Image (cartoon, rainbow, N blue to C red; front, top):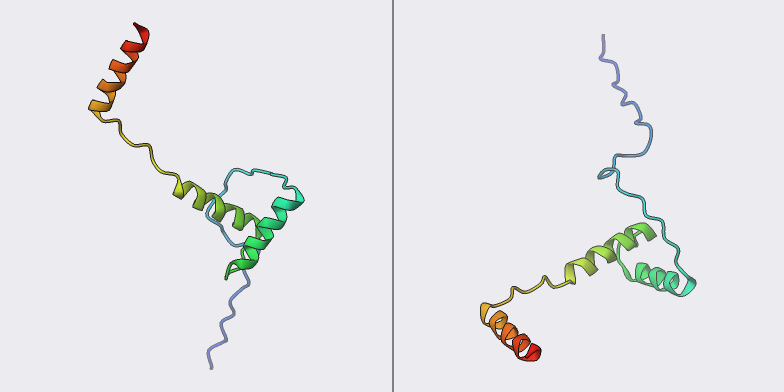
Length: 87
């Protein structure tokens, strides 16, 4: 007897994502929405609007420079200037 054909059942529902995140609803006026759509059109992958917003936020946060540590000599000089201003 021949082997029966194995049937792969269809998976139902949406595929799993990276997890449930916090929903943030925003309203965009026409000029900003048009700018967002223009940015999406320039991308090779043509992301959806929510994905485009996520990418832009990640890019903006990645370009923010971390605060520089304060050097001890700068701290001393600041204290001197503050003391002079008080006197």
